[in-house]
Amino acid sequence: MISGWDIGGAHLKVARCDEQGNNFQIIQVPCPLWQGIEYLEQAIESILAKLNSQHDLTVITMTGELVDIFANRQSGVSEILACVTKYISFNKILVYGADAGWLSPQQAEKQWRQVASRNWQATASLVATRQKQGILIDIGSTTCDIIVVEDGQEQVQGLTDYQRQTSRELLYTGAIRTPLIALSQTAPFNGKSVSLAAEVFATTGDCWCLLEQLAPNSIQDNSADGKPWQQQFCADRIARLLGCDSDQEKLSQWQQLAHWFAEQQYHLVANAVLHVISAHKNLPANAPIIGAGIGRFIAKECAQRLNRPYLDFHDLISVSQASASDHAPAVAVALLAQDQLA
Image 1: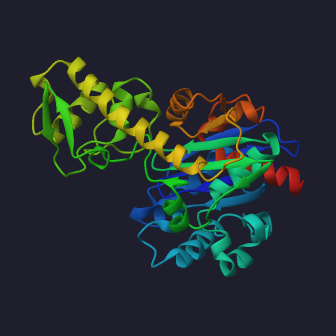
Image 2 (image 1 turned 180 degrees about the horizontal axis):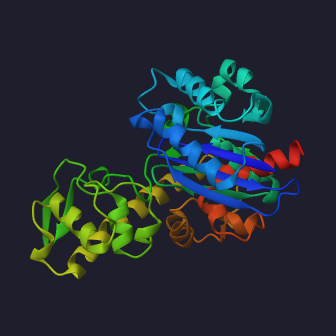
Image 3 (image 1 turned 90 degrees about the vertical axis):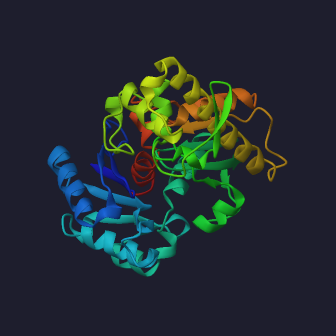
Protein backbone atom coordinates (compact mmCIF):
# COMPACT_ATOMS: atom_id res chain seq x y z
CA MET A 1 0.00 0.00 0.00
CA ILE A 2 1.00 3.62 -0.60
CA SER A 3 0.01 6.46 1.73
CA GLY A 4 0.25 10.04 0.53
CA TRP A 5 0.55 12.56 3.36
CA ASP A 6 -0.06 16.29 3.09
CA ILE A 7 1.06 17.84 6.37
CA GLY A 8 -0.45 21.31 6.73
CA GLY A 9 -0.54 23.89 9.44
CA ALA A 10 -4.18 23.16 10.31
CA HIS A 11 -4.84 19.60 9.07
CA LEU A 12 -3.12 16.34 8.24
CA LYS A 13 -4.56 14.71 5.13
CA VAL A 14 -3.77 11.15 4.09
CA ALA A 15 -4.74 9.30 0.90
CA ARG A 16 -4.03 5.57 0.85
CA CYS A 17 -4.17 3.35 -2.23
CA ASP A 18 -2.88 0.03 -3.51
CA GLU A 19 0.01 -0.46 -5.93
CA GLN A 20 -2.36 -0.08 -8.88
CA GLY A 21 -3.55 3.31 -7.63
CA ASN A 22 -6.98 1.95 -6.68
CA ASN A 23 -9.07 1.38 -3.54
CA PHE A 24 -8.50 4.80 -2.02
CA GLN A 25 -9.00 5.57 1.65
CA ILE A 26 -8.89 9.33 2.17
CA ILE A 27 -9.07 10.98 5.57
CA GLN A 28 -8.30 14.31 7.22
CA VAL A 29 -7.68 14.97 10.90
CA PRO A 30 -7.27 18.32 12.68
CA CYS A 31 -3.67 19.36 13.27
CA PRO A 32 -3.36 22.93 14.65
CA LEU A 33 0.40 22.76 14.31
CA TRP A 34 0.88 26.43 15.18
CA GLN A 35 -0.09 25.52 18.75
CA GLY A 36 2.72 22.97 19.17
CA ILE A 37 4.43 19.94 17.62
CA GLU A 38 2.44 17.69 19.97
CA TYR A 39 -0.62 18.35 17.79
CA LEU A 40 1.18 16.75 14.85
CA GLU A 41 2.03 13.79 17.07
CA GLN A 42 -1.65 13.42 18.01
CA ALA A 43 -2.70 13.69 14.36
CA ILE A 44 -0.21 11.00 13.30
CA GLU A 45 -1.37 8.69 16.08
CA SER A 46 -4.98 9.23 14.97
CA ILE A 47 -4.14 8.44 11.33
CA LEU A 48 -2.23 5.27 12.19
CA ALA A 49 -5.00 4.10 14.51
CA LYS A 50 -7.57 4.54 11.73
CA LEU A 51 -5.55 3.15 8.81
CA ASN A 52 -2.96 0.85 10.44
CA SER A 53 -0.66 2.17 7.72
CA GLN A 54 2.70 2.41 9.47
CA HIS A 55 4.15 -0.26 7.14
CA ASP A 56 3.00 1.46 3.93
CA LEU A 57 5.32 3.29 1.60
CA THR A 58 4.66 6.75 3.03
CA VAL A 59 5.19 9.66 0.66
CA ILE A 60 5.08 13.14 2.16
CA THR A 61 4.47 16.70 1.09
CA MET A 62 3.99 19.63 3.45
CA THR A 63 3.17 23.26 4.09
CA GLY A 64 3.24 23.03 7.88
CA GLU A 65 6.83 24.29 8.01
CA LEU A 66 5.39 27.81 7.69
CA VAL A 67 3.74 27.91 11.11
CA ASP A 68 5.24 30.25 13.67
CA ILE A 69 6.36 27.68 16.23
CA PHE A 70 9.36 27.09 13.96
CA ALA A 71 12.27 29.54 13.80
CA ASN A 72 12.26 29.33 10.00
CA ARG A 73 11.13 27.07 7.17
CA GLN A 74 14.29 24.98 7.22
CA SER A 75 13.74 24.24 10.89
CA GLY A 76 10.10 23.47 10.18
CA VAL A 77 10.91 20.85 7.54
CA SER A 78 13.47 19.24 9.85
CA GLU A 79 11.19 19.13 12.90
CA ILE A 80 8.20 17.82 10.97
CA LEU A 81 10.26 14.99 9.49
CA ALA A 82 11.76 14.19 12.89
CA CYS A 83 8.23 13.91 14.25
CA VAL A 84 7.05 11.58 11.48
CA THR A 85 10.06 9.30 11.84
CA LYS A 86 9.13 8.64 15.46
CA TYR A 87 6.20 6.64 14.10
CA ILE A 88 7.30 5.36 10.68
CA SER A 89 10.65 3.80 9.76
CA PHE A 90 13.09 5.87 7.71
CA ASN A 91 13.15 3.22 4.99
CA LYS A 92 9.37 3.49 4.56
CA ILE A 93 9.39 7.27 3.98
CA LEU A 94 10.02 9.29 0.84
CA VAL A 95 9.53 13.05 0.63
CA TYR A 96 8.22 14.78 -2.46
CA GLY A 97 11.02 17.04 -3.71
CA ALA A 98 9.47 18.28 -6.96
CA ASP A 99 12.27 18.51 -9.57
CA ALA A 100 14.70 16.90 -7.11
CA GLY A 101 12.63 13.72 -7.16
CA TRP A 102 11.80 11.51 -4.19
CA LEU A 103 14.05 12.20 -1.22
CA SER A 104 14.88 10.25 1.90
CA PRO A 105 14.19 12.13 5.16
CA GLN A 106 17.93 12.86 5.48
CA GLN A 107 18.11 14.19 1.90
CA ALA A 108 14.95 16.21 2.43
CA GLU A 109 16.47 17.99 5.42
CA LYS A 110 19.44 19.06 3.28
CA GLN A 111 17.32 19.96 0.25
CA TRP A 112 14.56 21.59 2.28
CA ARG A 113 13.90 24.28 -0.33
CA GLN A 114 12.71 21.55 -2.72
CA VAL A 115 10.38 20.25 0.00
CA ALA A 116 8.92 23.33 1.68
CA SER A 117 5.42 24.22 0.47
CA ARG A 118 5.53 22.14 -2.71
CA ASN A 119 2.21 20.33 -2.26
CA TRP A 120 0.65 22.47 -5.01
CA GLN A 121 3.32 21.25 -7.42
CA ALA A 122 2.44 17.62 -6.76
CA THR A 123 -1.18 18.32 -7.64
CA ALA A 124 -0.25 20.33 -10.73
CA SER A 125 2.18 17.64 -11.93
CA LEU A 126 -0.51 14.99 -11.67
CA VAL A 127 -3.06 17.19 -13.44
CA ALA A 128 -0.54 17.74 -16.24
CA THR A 129 -0.40 13.98 -16.86
CA ARG A 130 -4.17 13.95 -17.47
CA GLN A 131 -4.87 17.33 -19.05
CA LYS A 132 -2.76 19.04 -21.72
CA GLN A 133 -4.24 22.53 -21.24
CA GLY A 134 -5.99 23.87 -18.18
CA ILE A 135 -6.02 26.00 -15.07
CA LEU A 136 -5.82 24.24 -11.71
CA ILE A 137 -7.55 26.14 -8.89
CA ASP A 138 -7.13 24.46 -5.51
CA ILE A 139 -9.01 26.34 -2.77
CA GLY A 140 -8.67 24.91 0.70
CA SER A 141 -9.54 26.25 4.11
CA THR A 142 -6.84 28.93 4.02
CA THR A 143 -5.25 29.43 0.60
CA CYS A 144 -5.89 29.28 -3.12
CA ASP A 145 -3.38 27.94 -5.68
CA ILE A 146 -3.79 28.96 -9.33
CA ILE A 147 -1.58 26.94 -11.70
CA VAL A 148 -1.63 26.98 -15.49
CA VAL A 149 -0.98 23.76 -17.40
CA GLU A 150 0.17 24.15 -21.01
CA ASP A 151 1.19 21.37 -23.39
CA GLY A 152 1.09 18.84 -20.56
CA GLN A 153 3.45 20.82 -18.30
CA GLU A 154 2.72 23.01 -15.30
CA GLN A 155 3.87 26.53 -16.13
CA VAL A 156 4.69 28.71 -13.12
CA GLN A 157 6.33 32.07 -12.59
CA GLY A 158 7.83 31.14 -9.22
CA LEU A 159 8.39 28.25 -6.86
CA THR A 160 8.66 29.84 -3.41
CA ASP A 161 5.67 31.21 -1.54
CA TYR A 162 7.13 34.72 -1.85
CA GLN A 163 7.45 34.38 -5.63
CA ARG A 164 4.01 32.82 -5.92
CA GLN A 165 2.34 35.48 -3.80
CA THR A 166 3.99 38.06 -6.06
CA SER A 167 2.64 36.39 -9.22
CA ARG A 168 -0.75 35.72 -7.55
CA GLU A 169 -0.36 32.00 -8.22
CA LEU A 170 -0.72 31.76 -4.44
CA LEU A 171 -3.59 33.73 -2.99
CA TYR A 172 -4.20 33.84 0.75
CA THR A 173 -7.93 33.34 0.69
CA GLY A 174 -9.77 30.18 1.65
CA ALA A 175 -13.23 28.79 2.26
CA ILE A 176 -13.09 28.55 6.06
CA ARG A 177 -10.30 30.36 7.87
CA THR A 178 -10.02 33.71 6.05
CA PRO A 179 -11.14 36.59 8.30
CA LEU A 180 -13.96 38.54 6.67
CA ILE A 181 -12.13 41.76 7.51
CA ALA A 182 -9.53 40.59 4.95
CA LEU A 183 -12.19 40.84 2.22
CA SER A 184 -13.42 44.35 3.02
CA GLN A 185 -13.29 47.04 5.70
CA THR A 186 -16.92 48.05 5.11
CA ALA A 187 -20.09 46.17 4.13
CA PRO A 188 -23.62 47.13 3.11
CA PHE A 189 -26.37 46.39 5.63
CA ASN A 190 -29.93 47.71 5.78
CA GLY A 191 -29.10 50.16 3.02
CA LYS A 192 -26.09 51.67 4.81
CA SER A 193 -22.35 51.20 4.48
CA VAL A 194 -21.08 49.95 7.83
CA SER A 195 -17.45 50.02 9.00
CA LEU A 196 -16.36 46.58 10.14
CA ALA A 197 -14.51 45.85 13.36
CA ALA A 198 -10.85 45.08 12.67
CA GLU A 199 -11.07 41.83 14.64
CA VAL A 200 -11.26 38.16 13.70
CA PHE A 201 -14.90 37.95 14.77
CA ALA A 202 -16.03 35.99 11.69
CA THR A 203 -14.47 34.09 8.80
CA THR A 204 -15.40 32.87 5.34
CA GLY A 205 -16.61 29.58 6.83
CA ASP A 206 -19.46 31.51 8.45
CA CYS A 207 -20.58 32.85 5.07
CA TRP A 208 -20.39 29.56 3.23
CA CYS A 209 -22.28 27.76 6.01
CA LEU A 210 -24.99 30.43 5.92
CA LEU A 211 -25.19 29.94 2.15
CA GLU A 212 -25.23 26.13 2.56
CA GLN A 213 -22.12 25.61 0.44
CA LEU A 214 -20.38 23.98 3.40
CA ALA A 215 -22.00 21.49 5.78
CA PRO A 216 -21.42 22.58 9.40
CA ASN A 217 -20.55 19.06 10.54
CA SER A 218 -17.92 18.68 7.82
CA ILE A 219 -15.67 21.45 9.19
CA GLN A 220 -12.83 20.42 11.50
CA ASP A 221 -11.51 23.95 12.10
CA ASN A 222 -12.55 25.98 15.11
CA SER A 223 -14.74 28.97 14.41
CA ALA A 224 -13.62 32.46 15.47
CA ASP A 225 -15.36 32.14 18.85
CA GLY A 226 -15.00 28.37 19.21
CA LYS A 227 -18.75 27.76 18.88
CA PRO A 228 -20.32 25.42 16.30
CA TRP A 229 -20.83 26.14 12.60
CA GLN A 230 -24.64 25.97 12.57
CA GLN A 231 -26.26 28.95 10.89
CA GLN A 232 -27.38 30.85 13.98
CA PHE A 233 -23.86 30.83 15.42
CA CYS A 234 -22.50 31.97 12.05
CA ALA A 235 -24.95 34.87 12.05
CA ASP A 236 -23.89 35.75 15.62
CA ARG A 237 -20.25 35.99 14.58
CA ILE A 238 -20.91 38.08 11.48
CA ALA A 239 -23.13 40.45 13.50
CA ARG A 240 -20.20 41.17 15.82
CA LEU A 241 -18.28 42.62 12.88
CA LEU A 242 -21.04 45.23 12.57
CA GLY A 243 -21.14 45.92 16.31
CA CYS A 244 -24.56 44.38 16.85
CA ASP A 245 -26.37 41.16 17.76
CA SER A 246 -27.82 38.77 15.21
CA ASP A 247 -31.28 38.79 16.83
CA GLN A 248 -31.72 42.39 15.72
CA GLU A 249 -32.53 41.11 12.22
CA LYS A 250 -33.99 38.04 10.55
CA LEU A 251 -31.62 35.26 9.52
CA SER A 252 -32.35 36.14 5.89
CA GLN A 253 -30.65 39.52 6.39
CA TRP A 254 -27.47 37.83 7.59
CA GLN A 255 -27.63 35.44 4.64
CA GLN A 256 -27.92 38.46 2.35
CA LEU A 257 -24.78 39.91 3.95
CA ALA A 258 -23.07 36.52 3.52
CA HIS A 259 -23.93 36.73 -0.20
CA TRP A 260 -22.19 40.09 -0.35
CA PHE A 261 -19.02 38.74 1.28
CA ALA A 262 -19.18 35.72 -1.06
CA GLU A 263 -19.20 38.10 -4.02
CA GLN A 264 -16.04 39.77 -2.70
CA GLN A 265 -14.28 36.42 -2.54
CA TYR A 266 -15.50 35.35 -5.99
CA HIS A 267 -14.21 38.64 -7.36
CA LEU A 268 -10.86 38.27 -5.58
CA VAL A 269 -10.26 34.77 -6.98
CA ALA A 270 -11.52 35.54 -10.49
CA ASN A 271 -9.28 38.63 -10.68
CA ALA A 272 -6.28 36.55 -9.58
CA VAL A 273 -7.06 33.94 -12.25
CA LEU A 274 -7.20 36.66 -14.90
CA HIS A 275 -3.89 38.05 -13.59
CA VAL A 276 -2.22 34.63 -13.77
CA ILE A 277 -3.48 33.68 -17.23
CA SER A 278 -2.44 37.09 -18.60
CA ALA A 279 1.12 35.70 -18.54
CA HIS A 280 0.12 32.75 -20.77
CA LYS A 281 -0.71 34.13 -24.20
CA ASN A 282 -0.98 30.70 -25.83
CA LEU A 283 -3.43 29.20 -23.35
CA PRO A 284 -6.58 28.31 -25.32
CA ALA A 285 -9.76 30.19 -24.44
CA ASN A 286 -11.53 26.87 -23.90
CA ALA A 287 -8.88 25.42 -21.55
CA PRO A 288 -10.90 24.17 -18.58
CA ILE A 289 -10.65 25.14 -14.96
CA ILE A 290 -9.92 22.11 -12.78
CA GLY A 291 -11.26 22.62 -9.27
CA ALA A 292 -9.78 21.07 -6.14
CA GLY A 293 -10.01 21.68 -2.41
CA ILE A 294 -13.00 21.99 -0.11
CA GLY A 295 -13.68 25.42 -1.58
CA ARG A 296 -13.77 24.29 -5.20
CA PHE A 297 -17.34 25.55 -5.51
CA ILE A 298 -15.62 28.95 -5.75
CA ALA A 299 -13.49 27.67 -8.65
CA LYS A 300 -16.62 26.35 -10.36
CA GLU A 301 -18.29 29.75 -10.08
CA CYS A 302 -15.16 31.42 -11.46
CA ALA A 303 -15.22 29.05 -14.44
CA GLN A 304 -18.78 30.13 -15.17
CA ARG A 305 -17.89 33.81 -14.87
CA LEU A 306 -14.84 33.42 -17.08
CA ASN A 307 -16.80 31.34 -19.62
CA ARG A 308 -14.56 28.29 -19.31
CA PRO A 309 -15.42 24.59 -18.97
CA TYR A 310 -15.11 23.11 -15.48
CA LEU A 311 -13.84 19.76 -14.19
CA ASP A 312 -13.54 18.43 -10.66
CA PHE A 313 -10.07 17.07 -9.87
CA HIS A 314 -11.45 13.68 -8.82
CA ASP A 315 -13.30 13.28 -12.13
CA LEU A 316 -10.18 14.22 -14.08
CA ILE A 317 -8.12 11.50 -12.36
CA SER A 318 -11.00 8.97 -12.43
CA VAL A 319 -11.29 8.50 -8.67
CA SER A 320 -14.88 8.04 -7.52
CA GLN A 321 -14.60 9.70 -4.09
CA ALA A 322 -15.24 13.45 -4.05
CA SER A 323 -12.90 13.56 -1.05
CA ALA A 324 -10.05 13.05 -3.56
CA SER A 325 -10.77 16.61 -4.74
CA ASP A 326 -11.05 17.85 -1.15
CA HIS A 327 -7.53 16.64 -0.36
CA ALA A 328 -5.88 16.74 -3.79
CA PRO A 329 -2.18 17.04 -2.79
CA ALA A 330 -2.34 13.89 -0.63
CA VAL A 331 -3.96 11.99 -3.49
CA ALA A 332 -1.48 13.48 -5.95
CA VAL A 333 1.65 12.38 -4.09
CA ALA A 334 0.18 8.89 -3.66
CA LEU A 335 -0.58 8.56 -7.37
CA LEU A 336 2.72 10.09 -8.47
CA ALA A 337 4.52 7.60 -6.23
CA GLN A 338 2.36 4.76 -7.57
CA ASP A 339 3.28 5.76 -11.12
CA GLN A 340 6.97 6.45 -10.54
CA LEU A 341 7.96 4.03 -7.77
CA ALA A 342 5.62 1.04 -7.66
